[in-house]
Every structure is written in C-alpha cells, then in structure tokens.
Length: 550
Image (cartoon, rainbow, N blue to C red; front, top):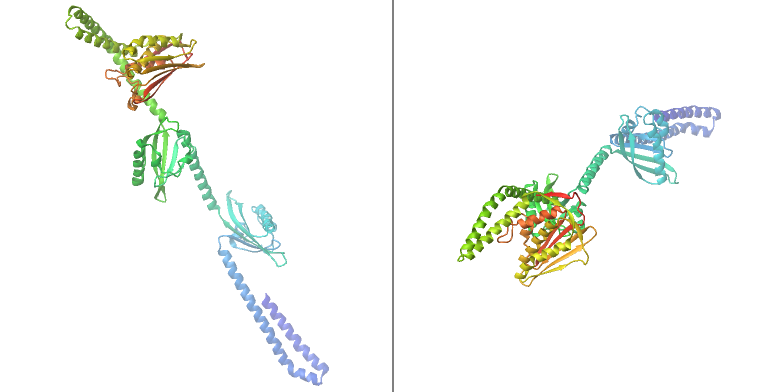
C-alpha cells in the first residue's frame, strides 16, 4: 500500500517538474537565468529523483523490517500455548494470538481496533466474559503496575477453564495510558490436580486427626514426628512432650525391646507388624494397646513408619473376666457333681475316726490330725457348694458396724493366738445399708482372716468404715508380707492361692458376694509392705430384692 503511494507521488512530481520547467523557459526566455536553468534542470531532476529514490528505498527497508518484525512477533505469540493480547490505551485490541481468538470464538472476526464490549457482539456465549474483561482491565490500570489474577472462563460444554492472567499496563512519558499487555496461561489441569491433592490431604488429615485410635508418625531413626489428638485422650500425656523424641526413650522397660524389634522389622522387610504392649496411663493405671506398624512409602522409597494403636484395655479385661467366669462355671459344674458324693463318705470317715479316738487313747495325736484334715475337706466342700448352688438372697436393712463387730469377735481369738491386734475405726451412729448380713459377714471374715494370716507377731490389722449418702467404704489394712504382682493379677481365681494349703476359693466367694451387692473390691499391696483391701458397697440395693448368684 505504502509502496504504491510513494510511486504515485514520484510520477506526479516528475510530470510537474518536466512540464513546469518547460513552461517557465518559454515564458521568460531568453535570459541568462533561464539559460542557466535550461542547462541545469536535468541535473536538478536527477539529484531530486536520486534523493526521492533514496528516501523511498529507506522507507521500504524500514517497512520491510517492520513487517518482518511483525511477522516474527506474530509467529512467536501464535506459537505460545498462552492467551496473548495487546491493547491500546483505550482498550482496543491491537493484536491477539490464535489461541486467544479461538478461546473467545473470534477466529473469523476483524478484531483490530475494537474494544471487548464491541467484540462481545460477535460471540453469544462469551459475551459476558468479554464485557467482564473491560472491568478487569480497569483494575490493572488503577493498580498502576503489573497485576496477577485467576480468572474462570465458562465453556460451552458446561466445564470451566481457569487462567492465571498477568496484566502489564504501559504508560506514556506524560503519564497517559499507552497500552496493555495481557498474558493468560490455562491452569485448569493444575487446579484440578491441586484440588484432588487438597482433597487427599484433607482426607488424610481427617483420618489422622479424627481416628478413634492413636496414630503416630516416626522417621527411620525412630523419632516421633507427629501424633494425633487421640494420643492425649487415651494416654493422658500431652503430645507436644513426645514429638521430636525417640520412641525407645519413652517406653517402659518391659515393652521397649518388643517395639524396637518390630520397628526394625518394618524397616528391614517393609511389611506390617502387629503386636500388643502394656504402657502406663498418666494416672498410673495399666493401658493395653494393640498396635500395627506400617511402612510409609514415598516414590518407591521407605520414608518413615506409621503406628496405629488401639486401646484394648477394656476388651482384655472383659476377656479376663470371661475367662474367670468360665473357670467359675467349671468349678460350679464340678462342685455340683462331686460335692454331695464327697460329703457322704466324709461323714462316715469322720464318725469312724471319732469312735477310734474314743477307744484308743494311745494314738490321740493321729486321730486329731485326721479329724482336722476331714474338717478341712468338709470346709472346702462347703465353699464349693456355695459357688455351685444358686441361692435366694433377701436384702434387708442391717447395721454394717454391727456386722464388723461380729466379725472381730469371731476372729479375735485367732488373732490373739498370733499376738496380732485388730483395731476398728467406725462412726458413733449406726450405718444402715441394704444387704444380706450373713454374706457380708462371710466376706469380711475372709478378708480379715487373710490379713491376720499375712501379719507377723505384734502387727496391727486396722479396719475402718467411712460412709456417704449413697455408699459405704470398708478398708482392711495390714502390715504383713503383701501380695506379689503376679498373684495380684490372678487374685480371685479358684484354686489359685499364695498359701501353702490354700484353695483360692475364699476370695472367689468374696468376689461373688461383692458382685451380688453391686459393689466393688480393690487391692493395694506391695511385697513386704502390707496390703489394703477396699470394699465399697451401695447404701441402697439397685435392683430386685432377690438376686440369684452362682
């Protein structure tokens, strides 16, 4: 276009020069000046024509260079996978790449010199988006510098495309608007991945934080890197006191090696390991945890260990109670089948021994030993029958202080024989509870008798009574030999006793009496430091007046 313009101008000026100079020569000839002009006009024409062609060639070179630069720029922006748009200071489109034209469905539109709102007329679906672009561009002008925003562009198929858009305002020297450069990168896939990653992270966080079990993260050195809130709820310890410390330093001696061996096996074999361990609660109570250690694999490499620990304390205690119940059931069945069969020949043997004792004075010691052992067998059979035979228990109001007085009266002689004192601390007034008095008497006889047998000469067995509005507490404390930890765990089991001739049935019966009264019985003991038995019974019996026990 410009080339034709320059050529036309040259031809017009050439014609004007030829005809103009010839006309002037005829008009003013002859004269010396005209003669000079006549001889120099060709030279001037050549000079002027040369200058014109030089100017024309320079302009054409500049034009070609500009076109080449524009072509390179167009090739560059069209090869980009981003949306690129150049606008002037008024918001009119100067140039956009093919990606941008296709994005707004403007491929066949002469967009140059038009604003976004004008181009909206050519695209029904993207009309609102194009109008919004003017609002967004204005925010870039107001910011006065480069801004970066995320813009969501709805698509005809119902989906959305998200663009990370950079807008660069350009200013003239006088501060007026020169132009706006807009570059937008499609980050839809990245946003989808980020969303999925965030969902996965939130699912992991929910699984970690809201798991009903303890979840602990360890590095390959056995250092705790994180634990969930359930840790404090189950163990009572603050999680911050454990994070950053090695697990081997925190475990009790009886569990440390087991856990370290399992962790080592997880690291070596990269397979799950299950185990149970006993750890103390912060309040000192025993805690049984069922743990599973799993390897954490990141990029096919072992990155750490995750330990999931479930509190199975109540479950194991229930299993232990069931085990004891099963043993009691076996005892009951055995008792029911043999107790009566034993007592019949037992009565005959006892009668015969008594006859021999009356007739033979020489062997009185032997007969007395035989009678004592027969009485002992009879006592054991009685306890077996107590466990085996269901009884009708009638609860009545009774003074528990009177029951304790009766117990002391029965055992005072035995205590005196061993030079042991029994002291009683009770209230001044009556303490009435609903109970079966004979069973409570049997209960406290068993407990106090055990205390006497565990004590040494000149020791004191202290019995104390405390009461509140809803329950009474009886404590029997001695300074005897105490109970070993092993026996403490199995106390109450039939046929398990620390005494040389004990059967364990006495404490079994005691447990059943406490259970039938809806009470509790606890033991506090250390070897060689004595034992304290704490029996707590309700003032009012919660349930029917008649309860069956086995």
